[in-house]
Length: 227
Image (cartoon, rainbow, N blue to C red; front, side, top):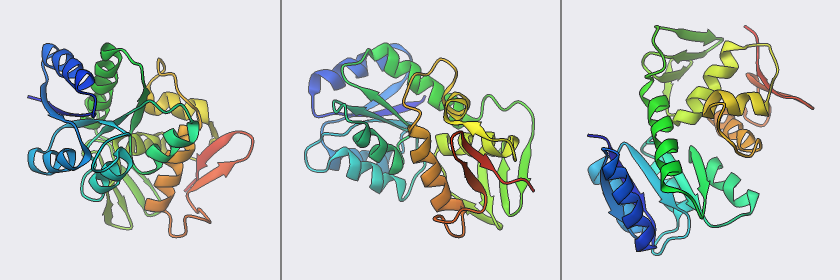
């Protein structure tokens, strides 16, 4: 059974999400502070984490950073903060998606299901390996290699890289990339793509400040270098 780690210092929020997720057929792991969340993430290996930013012990930013050092588990941030910069920081340290409070539990479950589908590769029904230069994306195995070395990427980073490589040489707008990685029905800041691009460059580029593969197309968005 798919297990969801739900982390928030507001017990009513955790209890509400636990009830909705379990009704939808998921197993849940509740946590109310950052340190407990880290311990559960390490010991129980959940399939997805719903993580609030404002937590006692360790805040959500620190929890996310520490998890990302050892795991690519999908992470959805919950935040009461409305500043775009806070959301972008969360994405830059490795979160896959974000939901602002107040929210509908059904929305959280819908986002979780979509993210789990992308993680499992259930939408990839045919074998496909994308190769450009030293970068390789295996759609079946949901893996990325650069110069023969495996690279850990989040589910959102994986789908973003695949979209760019499938359209190598063609500039894609931030809106197009947002649709590619989150789905056409998703509503969110186009600037989130910049955060994920920054992460990808840090992982696959020899010199991230001078990218050789993921190129900025000013006034449009981004493109992957043609082979």
